Amino acid sequence: MRTEHLLYFTTVAEKGSIAAAAAELGRNRSTLSMAISALEDELGTELFVRRGNSLLLSSVGELILDDCQRLLTLQEKILYRCTAPSGSEHCELSIGRDDVMTESFWRRVITHIRTSLPDVRLSMRFAGSDELPELVRQGQLDLAYAMAFHPTYSGDSLYQQIVTKIRMQMMSAQQHRLARLSHLNNADLAGSTQITYLDSDQEERFRLANMDTNTLALSSFELIRDGIKDGLGWGYVPEPLLIMEEEDSAGLSLLNHGLNTAWYPYLAYSRDPLSSPDKPSNHTDRALQQVHRIVIEEMKQARIL
Image (cartoon, rainbow, N blue to C red; front, side, top):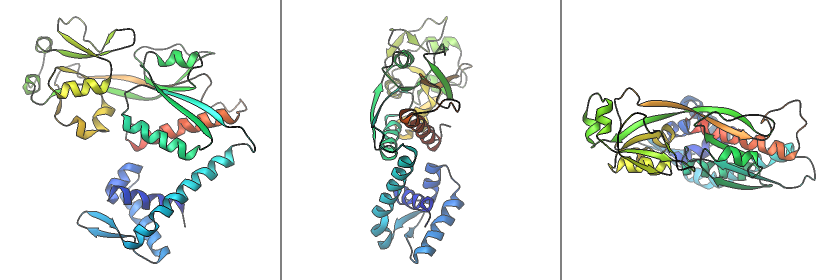
């Protein structure tokens, strides 16, 4: 029995369809379908009952679902203990993040870390994108993820690695007058309130230069998205908040302006390189690298990478 097949089974059970599970795992639907069939053949029973476009657990599927989840959890623990030195002490890791990714994304990351690294004492801290690099440099955080407004020095006390690029999109509510215009110029935008991002230094980010317009400065991207949805103005929203929480983003429109898209690097900050083959790593280094791999894996499943 392959644990990969168990993962496919539990994910299909959670999502209710092969298509949704394949999207969640970043796999082809045919791969999952064949794996489920192979598992049913091996067990000699049907695990799902088809109802229209949905798959419901059979009585046997319901009976074994929790045990399959326990086996997957046990696999994660075994893999972790095989990489951790015998008799090693518990390590503590402090992770920082901004709010470009959704709260639900970071909940999944935390759950994955706790499952895979049960011996790690974990803390996660929210801070502004401009604050996080310095918190890592000072030793208050071991690892941080943030969108970079400006390049940050990388040297002996701070390393940065580009994880991906974040697309900022100029949005308004669908009922807003700007959304009804086929093409916008600066004069059109200047006639409406721009909702900007207020950083820890009280500086407004993403405010268009040389434009005389009223602004509403908010301290989180989710507040900006929701303010735009409520018709308070237009502004830039990180693409992850649009595609990871589609229900909350319903009712928003991309404005047809020449500056409706901007790209910013999304970085991982650490005091040591996250992959350094020439340096012998200790237990904490290995745990930190595994945490980074988990974040990358969750980003792939969320279709950010």
